[in-house]
Length: 99
Image 1 (cartoon, rainbow, N blue to C red):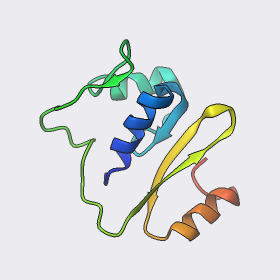
Image 2 (cartoon, rainbow, N blue to C red):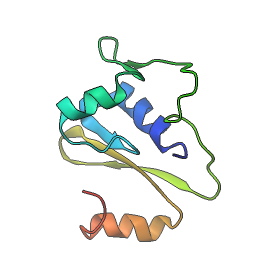
Image 3 (cartoon, rainbow, N blue to C red):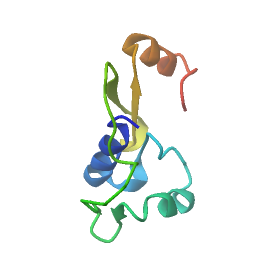
């Protein structure tokens, strides 16, 4: 899914996996998210497990897509991607984007 998942995982390393959502990792409940990323993420070391063979979650083509990071309240972050950055960000700020 573009590079959105990779950016989401990198932000999880930086700010803690509990504080970042984006890409395929939009589940809000930590007990639901943890099993989804357990094969990619080392929770004890707070690091991505690199060089995972045949892992379709990490890479893709970017084309004309934009990847953005929204800083939310309480040091939480959302990573998204879109082709029309102004339109997509406007939807977030108007409350009609992904919450």
